[in-house]
Image 1 (tube, rainbow, N blue to C red):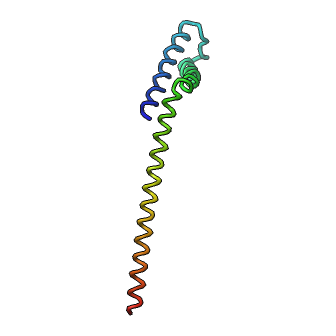
Image 2: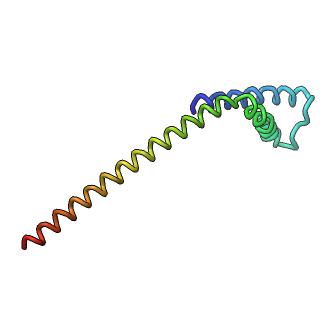
Image 3: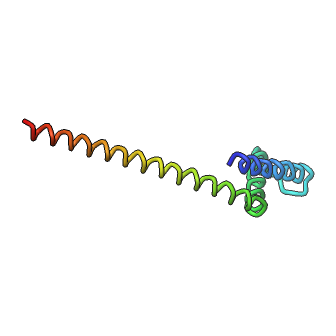
Length: 103
C-alpha cells in the first residue's frame, strides 16, 4: 500500500512540475490574482488522476489484494475469539448448573 501511495505521489509531483513550467512559461493560463499557486496544484491533481488510474492499475490491484487478505485474516481472528467466548460462557453455565443441582 505504501508503494502505491508513493508512486501516486510521484506522478502528482511530476505533473506539478510540468504544469508549473507550462504556467510560468505562458503556455497554460495563469490563475486570477493570487490564486496562481492553487490553480497550478488543482491542474496537476486533475492531470495526475487519470494518469495514475491507467499507469498504476497493476499496483492498485496488488494493493487491494493485500487489503482483502488483511480483512479476511481479521475476520477469522474475530470469529475465533467469538467462538472462544461462546465456549467460556457455555462452560460457566454448565458449572453453574451443576452447583445449583448440588444444593
